[in-house]
Amino acid sequence: MTMGKALRLISSLAMVALADQAAAAGTGDPANGQRLFSRCSACHSIQGDNKSGPALNGVIDRKAAGVEGYDYSSALANSGITWTEDTLDKYLAGPTRLVRGTRMTISVSREQERADIIAYLKSLGRP
Ligand code: HEC
Image 1 (cartoon, protein in one colour):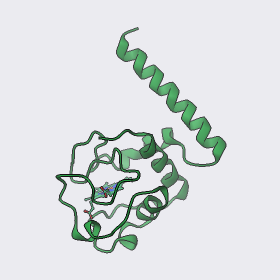
Image 2: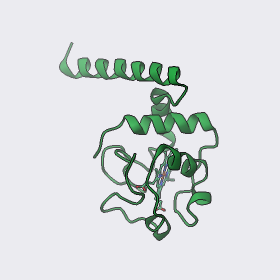
Image 3: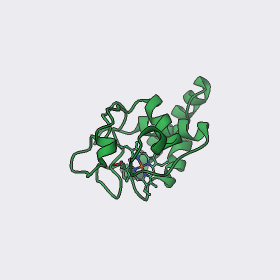
Image 4: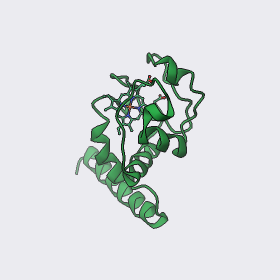
C-alpha cells in the first residue's frame, strides 16, 4: 500500500469513528456533512482559497467576514457575528433572515443536515 493510500484509509477510518461518536452524542454526523457539502463546494473551498464564496476551513470560532482577501458584503462585514455552531445553524437555515443583505442566498432547511454540515466544518483544520 502506498503512503497516500494508507493516509486516506486512516482518515476515512477516523471519519467513521467521528461519525459513530456524533451519532452517540445525538449531534451532527461529519461524514454525512462531507457528502452534503457538495451543495456548498461550487462556491466554497475548504483549502483556504476563495471562490465566489469565502474559504470555509477554520470557519468555526472565526469572526464573520474574517477571510482575508475576500470581498464580503458590507452586511456580513458589519454583522458582528462570530461563527459558532449556533450562529452557523441560524445562518444556514436562512442567511438573509439572520443577516439582511448578505450575498449568500442558499439555505439548508433540514435541521439534521445543518448539524451534519456544521460537524463536518468543525472537523476541518484552519487555513
Ligand atoms: C451560490 C454560491 C454559494 C453557495 C452554493 C453557498 N454559499 Fe456560502 N457564501 C456565499 C457567498 C457569496 C458568501 C459571502 C456572503 C457575503 O459576503 O455576504 C457566503 C458566505 C458563507 C459563510 C460565511 C463565511 C464567513 O467567512 O463569514 C458561511 C459560513 C457559508 N457561506 C456557508 C455555506 C455552506 C455551509 C453552504 C452549503 C450548504 C454554502 N455556504 C453554500 C455563496 C455561496
